[in-house]
Length: 197
Image (cartoon, rainbow, N blue to C red; front, side, top):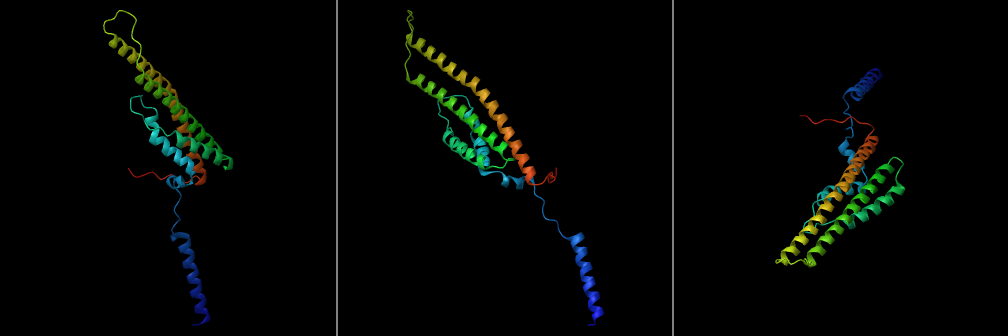
């Protein structure tokens, strides 16, 4: 092979490589919001899971069944979030602060619910004095009193829990917004691909 032929071959290979590189090389996959979830700190993901799992039981009406409350897990999670917040970047700090506030809000609601549940349990275990009037059916009078107290405890929980639930819902919404904002920074404002209808 002559030197001239070799030069032409190298030139053709270079042109082919340039054309492939410029027009045919597959683009690397762009990060999506779904892949950005991996960037969300583990403690924040755990709080979201915990809130989704227990939110209905925390704010459900009081009844004789003792609902399982996640107070120990919430306390431990709050400690972890507070520790992680000290090491977080300035961009991540608002996310951690909101997560800690959400833990505090849920813990207050759990404490209030347990206090109301304890009052209800004590009411059921304690016989109430009967009326001093000359009522013939004193046991019915006692039952009516117990029913009145029970209704009062349940109603008070319904009224108090609404405020706790609204606060928790607002904090949870803010947490998800801050999480999306942080993930959007991490993925460099990649376009969101909408699923086909």
